[in-house]
Length: 264
Image 1 (cartoon, one colour):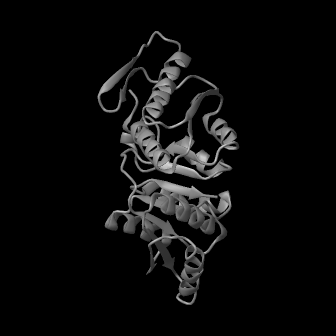
Image 2 (image 1 turned 135 degrees about the horizontal axis):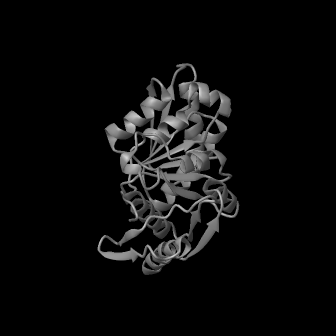
Image 3 (image 1 turned 45 degrees about the horizontal axis):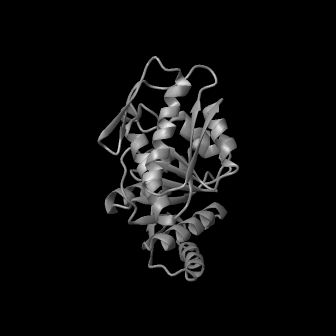
């Protein structure tokens, strides 16, 4: 049965696409060694059910899901195209991403309800390898009303700020810019940079500085204040350093209760 994460992912993507007037594309992939397709039923719009026949070849069952996605987009007037690929899932997604503007992926796969907090292996690999920004969606869908930008003045945080400004402006939403300061001598300078950049947009912007460890403070503030979309820069250290020390990006992706837009 298509899981709640898939439902949330589709709903999140279609809602943003509808409001922005963009085209979306879905790619469903099969593993290079062994297929990973579940038999059962797929809920459509919370009511209708499509049964996936166990006797059908895996490719045919996946095609049913692709056709369902196309139908849902057509019902909402959203242009889309679908692709059925073969190979290592994360590699195929990243390869297809070269001709796209944004990759949208679920936090975990079919077993997300049993998650201990870790990213799924495919999601983690895609967030590290993707040549384009990645939108990571949790299991539960919710409309976007209160976006949050985590900004530290880095180059990738600046890319996240650009994306946040464009999305918030297009959707006519207020934007909160959060800076987690460790050095009190630089926190004012960092937000001044954000103010100068965002003043060219017709936005209502709230700027805030808090102290503490960035990874924990970002997640805490999302939970406490009910933000429903986080913009953040991608990984900032080498893979070896992250394996030893961890990273703000990794922690936020694992623990954020809302979708995360990961900018490159």
